[in-house]
Length: 544
Image (cartoon, rainbow, N blue to C red; front, top):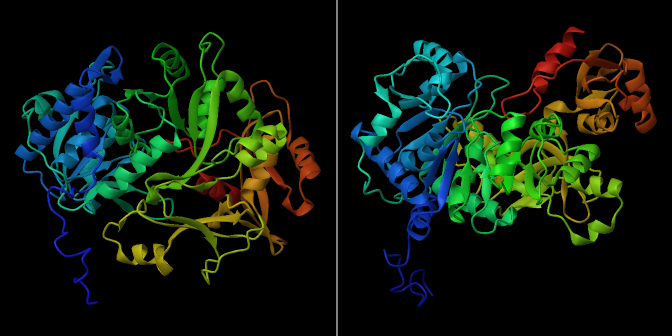
């Protein structure tokens, strides 16, 4: 039978009655229809219901359209976790433009590069960041329309950089703005830049379909019942807050904004706003656990905490459980919309010892329901590695929640998708039960005397020491061995431990060649999302 002659194809075409492009914008519209009076956003003393949230998003879209913003234009935002950031996640794509959320800790040179590379047309910026944004604008080639946001709950003294005030600008828009779904669900919805630790950052492009699917997968993964209360400890600029700005609308939940990550504010909001869920890097856990006794609050319920980056050490997991938090380990990258892998817990693991449970929790896990395939392959041959928990390969992804590609960078895009897989650059193993476990970034593997050393393995041992609060291990050049492990360590307040003590401790748990030859005590440099900046430590190790 010729193509197109099947009875399952004849007269069964797509039409407006049976097909609509997938877009997370529909989540807010539904929440406003079904739960108009439900609290959507909490910010200081402000309370915003879903009817108002939806109206304000449409006003923002209308106001942007009045400036000529339309399909594939870029609207950049330099905002912390405040209501306008949530409004931008809906209002900007309602015009079919692309939202570009910038890391609030970037320097002026990198901000200028991003503005130019993205061809920014409009910039919404918080007055707190006025000094660095002003410098960036002086370096940039583009001259976007600048809209200043003044936080009414937490006023900032920064200089006004534009002629438009955010609130007045938004109020100029029509509350019944007639937006529509994207022409194609493959259309770009957001632009996020990688860290750019080796050269200029790459612009990762998300599409409406991927954002829709990942947002739903978050709800499933987090076992979110209707009306959760979500505390914004994760920066919304980071992979669009792992798509949670859209996820929460699915279940008509409450966004609890957090302008600054501070222990007193976190504990107060968790207790007073009845928070049910939060996300963040391990630094968020440390901030909560190391809060003073007068800042901490007793909790009458278990709170779901989702963390990424390095797996938390056993001692931290135990402390979080005691404090009232159930920790779930996620894994992903900017290129896969944030988290796309979850350490799905098996009930039978509850019977294991705490040490064995910690070993299970240290694994990254299995694919999200929205991810089509996750595997560990030989990076050269693309052959699957044995599922023995030992053979190293590269972790690779395939499916609808993989980025469109890198903006204006076809060579990098082609390389990332070589062989029909997204190459993560992360090295890991596949366990017999199908769970993956990271062993290192390819650039973080230490090769000493021809032997590969996983920096994560050495760090795991260091974290077991009672006096170690944080640790990072990198390669230090060595004339004899090529490279040797160098540990950078933060110790707990009041601890008395020296280099020889930690080296001896590691020697008890590691093969001799894996034991750090050097230990440096310092405050570890971290990104705004709490990840330790190993590239900076590698440079420091070269100077030793």
